[in-house]
Image (cartoon, rainbow, N blue to C red):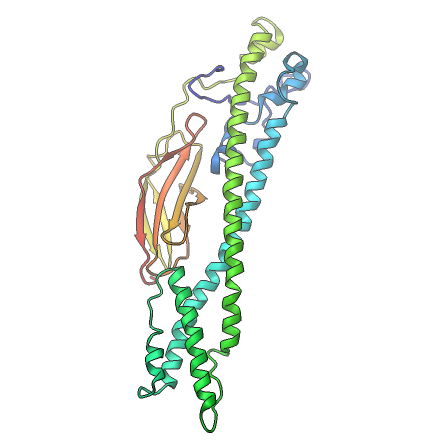
Length: 346
């Protein structure tokens, strides 16, 4: 539709050649973000374009291009969505830590409680068969929750039996925790999971809006370039200024970023990448999800030099990873999925 073709976006030189002090493209917004390519295409687009050609219209006789939005309107929209996405990501990470921390604690406590009840109930007691039911595998969030619920029920049964003896015996506590306290703590997990689910939905909505804003800005920048070129012919001051804007006529599509290794460290995973892959990508992300826990991928920015460490996870969880890269020509190129089963902490 505009100069550059092939889906290429306009690249900013951010030059202010003394013509009213206005730069054809403003690099300020990208500069404040350090020119960093990031998730969803938004930061990658700003870092690539250095801002928005529309912003320059007002300072360069924008009255000739009034069918475009007010100067900077769409660019400001994108930077606003980027900030919104950052906030949503931080809130989701906090909610995920709150849940994962509790799940890990319940898993450890369930083992300790089972051992304590087993030691207190004689093998000849009918309750021993109930205690034996506590030794369930804790593979994944759902399994840990089921064992926690059963642990609370049987713990209460054991305490009731102790209270009925003559003379009555005190209720058991494990690691200074009563069954009532443990039950209350477990009931508090449900709203924490609800908060995590809500935050996850917000992140997906913000990322979708961010991507839409990036594509809108890309489209308007191309249209602006074409309109400016038609309004101000070569040989005029404004027409000649447009020639200084590089339009990346041969922007190649991004190449897939390949994962060379996924190594378990403790209960976390470290992914490293093939340095020869991922050429031409300005947006690079590592995607991962836990089978039975996540309905969609979680995303983190790729660190090509050092690799990315994700987790911690729970033993026996299955984690699936892949990369997703893009640029102004192609927003998404994904690598093949790789799945890893978390073993004992190493």
